[in-house]
Image (tube, rainbow, N blue to C red; front, side, top):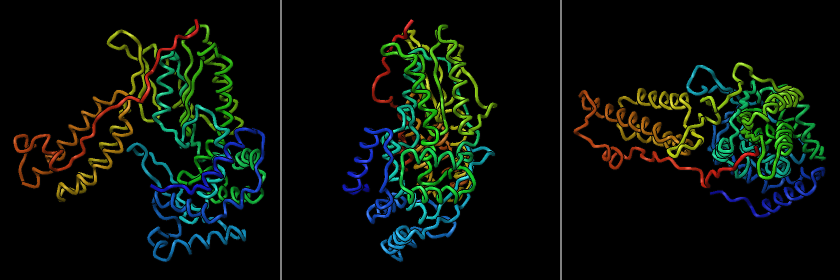
Length: 437
């Protein structure tokens, strides 16, 4: 595990505390900290830990280590200090979305530029983090998608069953640089930092933040922070003691708003939608009308959030509770990926196949292990085991699945096939909070 230097941790805490205590304070003298050796070293270690493909220059971590990482960082530091640093163009790479025909375009900066972005993030993140709202979870320190799901599940328990499910059209590609720099300047009064930030943005094109950029998650949260503030204000406006008529959760560009189902709150759905459209309009963020919709959980409808399908069901005791499972298209995408591996490695030993698929299964299951995924996991486990059995039988030029040859336990204990299909509930119960009537 890589540990952040204590002096850098102290600086980060000082910046956060100052920003939290004085919401209107504009920070200066930040650029010198971006250029410091320890900041660049920490940024390099972060980039190296994430590994990733090389940028447009083709330089890899192995090549950097071979020629000397200290020398590499010294060159970056000199360029930053002398203000001769210029970011390279990003390398574009298309990756399939959810195993379908649609693609997402990743913008991959060079390792050199990743280090600079990482250094800038280390200094700016604690400042902006102090301003971010409780309902924002995307790529923030000590926050997880599971916490966002838990927040939504808790709102369903509280009878917030009218769902405003908005899809933002190509959000990352349409961030307006001028508006984003304006928002950053409200907290940063440092010409060198603002100049560096502007160069990083311009390297991606006339607008947008690169999906794949180190600093992009912080900037995308900053861009939508006013939307979060509006929703927080709506929550407080409808507050009655412990209860509010509105809840929301946002993870990057994935936003869901939950409204109380009581007839007295019918006006809220339209009012919130109108205000939300106004705020997004100011940012020139377009809503994908085809994918956006309003859902009523009381009518048995469901909605998707962060890869989960959420609905409301009755418990064995007859009480309404949230029910969330992996979306069908996520399961289909996983099986398509595994099927392709089995196809490509037909002639390879089963040990090698298992070594490739185990990390994929482990990562997928760990993400979806919260909620009510047991049935889905059972299906995947059975499917994978059958594929392994057929692989072994083909190697012996035989038909069938070898049910009598190998037990299920043998596949996992001897071959080492992944067997961690256990669901868990988010720590902390979902207490019933009676809504104001």
